Image (cartoon, rainbow, N blue to C red; front, top):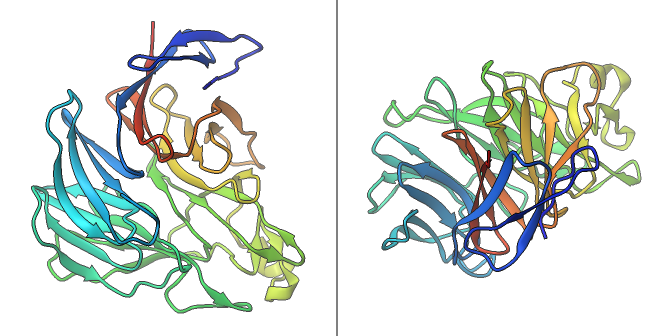
Length: 333
């Protein structure tokens, strides 16, 4: 079941196109299966009456990934790109489709066809990069997942970069640094860039929490010298002085919660929803305050592997990697 709790009230709502019920938090929300039978969906884009979605499409290291255009009304699906190596990020910019794979970023026609490699041999954690986010000025934001030897971060890793699709031959420009894996990002109505942060490994003998952080452009955000909410890591050359200058966490999640998706709530501009892959739930966090770590509230739980969130046209969309579905969450009243 999927359930959302609000002040002890539970409402059962029928799931459209599915043979079971789900528990929801209030009469204002309803959940339905919009698209089914997807092979490991990661990031997706709502494009009019279609969903454009990246698929792992097999085992993690098969390099069988695809990007597929799927009509919401159930029409014929069309493959726009295939034989991709773990595509975790896509963006539609004008008439182009941008794709982030394990260690390269490509651009190609939005209608499909061969791609051009924009950045290759991107440093990473040995598994993947994250999502692509189009900023308000049209630049594309992406991350390189972190790799280190002791306290020394591998060159070019653990960073956020931007690239301007309007400039032919443009090179990525560093936006911020000091992240283990700034996997998913969103821009709120005030122009603040928020990122999720996955921080695996041991730091002074204990794991670090995953995070939600407001990104300060041009600033080092601390990893691996500072983790959690500016916790000093002595074994990796952290110090009180160094960590005092690191942007604070807006929210903390359990170690290995794995926040793979984030979107501004279409029902409250002052909150974001975050998909926690390993915890099988969606949570909401207020962005209204910047003082102290903000509590985390549950929105949906008992999902399979919630992956990516998109807010569009007053509703929230969610890809579930485990079930191969895209869900639509909207007001029911």
